[in-house]
Amino acid sequence: MRIFTRKGTVLSRRKFFKLLGGMGLTGAVASISGCSTDAVGGKGWIPGQYQVPGNWPVKVKGRIPIDPANPSIVRDDQKCILCGQCLDVCEKVQTVYGYYELPIKKDITCVNCGQCALWCPTSSIREREDLQSVLRVLEDPNLHIVIQTAPATRVSLGEEFGLPTGSIVEGQQVAALKLLGFDAVFDTNFSADVTIMEEATELLKRLDKGNALPQFTSCCPGWVKFCEYYYPDLLPHLSSVKSPQQILGVLAKTYYSERVGIAPENIVSVAVMPCTAKKFECQRPEMNAAGRKAGNPQIRDVDFILTTRELARLMKLRKIDLSGLESAAYDHLMGESSGAGVIFGATGGVMEAAVRSLYFLVSKQRPPEQLLKFDAVRGLGGVKEAEVMIPGKGSLKVAVCHGLKNARMILEKVRGDNSPWSFIEFMGCVGGCIGGGGQPRTSLASADEVRQARIAGLYSLDDRIYRKRASFENQKVQTLYKEYLGNPGSDLAETLLHTHYVDRAKDVTIRKK
Ligand code: SF4
Ligand code: SF4
Image (tube, rainbow, N blue to C red):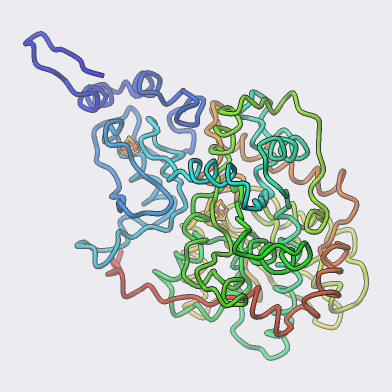
């Protein structure tokens, strides 16, 4: 786009948008810059939808730095109007930008959460695409392509196809993936159930030994990286259990690979995620357990991530309309889910799932009704606290937080030895994964309305649609342990399903606030 001024000089697209942005006309910028087209993955943007104070009407303010090698996000400089929305979310909601000193020591500090991609009014920031790579492998007849779908995408993908916010499209998503040519479609809810079996077992061990308490959840790679940068002294508190995405990836190239007789090097593992941090997570050097087991460390446990927005683009490219599809079922070996697995997508869900199974592991009894609707950890409160009575263990104090500013608050208490909790859930994005950086942009004015509608979709799957409510009841998970892993925490489970963390504090100079 070239704009000629009265003096005959040419105004670049970016300068033109900056001019409009500086005049407080960012709404106009958003629509004419392409933010509202499918090509950039969104249906529009409403200023202030994520409720950061100030900054409207938009003035030219600056922007966050993005490393050219960032595996999660990229910026199209031509679209950036220097409005500073990305600065605001990164600094005020996530407390990452502004919490380190310049000059940068290594790569540019980033927890890869992608919240800036949701806030950017012109879609200048977006996910680093894996779409072309996935299209390439789908065309290779020698490869067997498996795909998993995260809990949160089944209540948001429909928005890209004009369905009401929070619509449940679980079966239609599976049908679309089969039409696209994936050889097996698995459910990340299944591996969320496995995560819980391992994490609850780990917590019991810590409680027995009084060791490294409180235990922190570890299924959010944005939160994990934040802890590695800013609170490395607290890394022993992090559960060693991998995220559900990585657990399904490694099981696809070990358990499934052995069952179907396809070598792991011929399997490509793709994940549909609401998350841009997952693109970073799957590239972590240690995420190659299946390859190490097979004697070929080059094999990655998860090869490619498609965000919810990328999957919608792929479907539109192939002219698949989600709303016209009949439901299809997940593939059998790793397709069963409990209600506990699906609520992982909402803030508080991992905690609720964990206490349901913890109760059973200790008492061998089904958890009582109040743990099947654990209201104290539900909802959008920034920090939620609760107490739960576990027979034989007594009363356990737990906490849940979402958004990294809230995480920082909790971590300061733990660091100051001022924490009453035994177990804490951390999620990087506000609302949990339903508010992830790879989720559809929304044209609704209030972001909390969107979050609540998606969360309601997940809870209704939990209490109305799935027959099993707790991870230990998942029969396919029971089969996995019986026929392959042994018990939760066994040597093989430790090798495949657990990980370690790195101290990244040496990469940043922390700014003292
Ligand atoms: S939010 Fe987008 S348009 Fe605004 S400064 Fe950041 S990258 Fe540029
Ligand atoms: S909360 Fe979910 S979507 Fe957000 S960074 Fe963590 S794992 Fe990704």
